[in-house]
Amino acid sequence: MRIWVGIVLAVVAGVAVSVLTGVALSLAASPPSQLQASVHGYVQTPAGRLPHAFLTIATYPDSLAGEHGTSGGAHPDWVSYGPSTNLQVPAHALVTMTIRQYDSGGTIYNPYFAQVQGTVGGTAIVNGKTVTAIPQGTVAHTFTLHMFPANQPALFISVPLPAVPGNAPNLANGYPRPNVVTFSFVTGGPGRYVWNCEYPCGTNYRGFGGPMSTQGYMAGTLTVG
Ligand SMILES: [Cu+2]
Image 1 (spheres, rainbow, N blue to C red):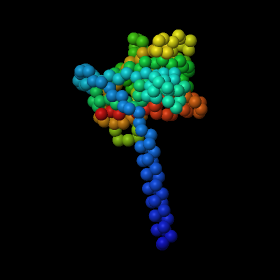
Image 2 (image 1 turned 90 degrees about the horizontal axis):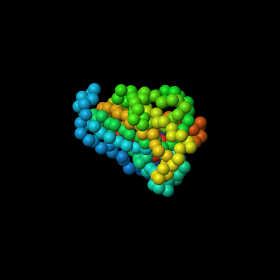
Image 3 (image 1 turned 90 degrees about the vertical axis):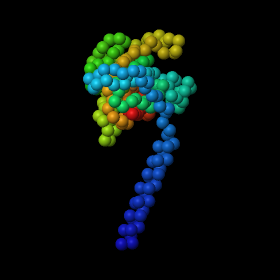
C-alpha cells in the first residue's frame, strides 16, 4: 500500500513539474505584437448587416520587413508573413483581408490548396481579377486558417497566393512588384484559430520545416473577438 501511495505521489509531482515547465515555456516565448483589423462602417452580407473590418498583411522572401526588425532577427533568410503573424479581427463581422505577395514560388503538392476555400463567394481578387483558384504551378504561399480542436465557431479559409516571377526586378523597397490578393470572410462568435502556409516554402521535411512550422514566419494565430 505504501509503495502505491509513493508511486501515485511521484506521478502527481511529475505532472505538476511538467505543467509548470509548460507554463514557463509559454511565458518565455512571448507572442509577436498583435495586428488588429480596423473597422470602417457597416456592410450588407448574407449573414445580415455587419461591421466591415479590414486587415492588410504581406508575404516576403525573407524576414527583413516583418516583426523581426530590419536586421531580420534569428533567421533573416527565412520566408515570412508581416508586419505581424498575430492577427485580431472582430466577432460577427465581414473581414476583408488584403495580402501583398512579394515572393517567387513553384508547384504546390496538393491541388486543393491552389483553390480558394471558405471565403465569401468562394472567390478571391488577384490583381483586380476575381478567381476561384490559381494554376497549381504558380503558388508562392497560402493563407490557410484552421480551427483549434476546441468548442468554438467553425472557421476555415484557404487562399492561394500567386508567385511573382523569379526574375522580376526589385523596386525601391527591395522587393519586386507584389501580387495583391483580396478576399473576405464572415466571422462568428469569439474564438482563437491558427493559420499557416501550405506551400512547401520552408526547410527540411520536403519543405515543411523551419519557417513553415514557426510562428512569426509562415504560421500565426488569428483571434476573433
Ligand atoms: Cu509559405
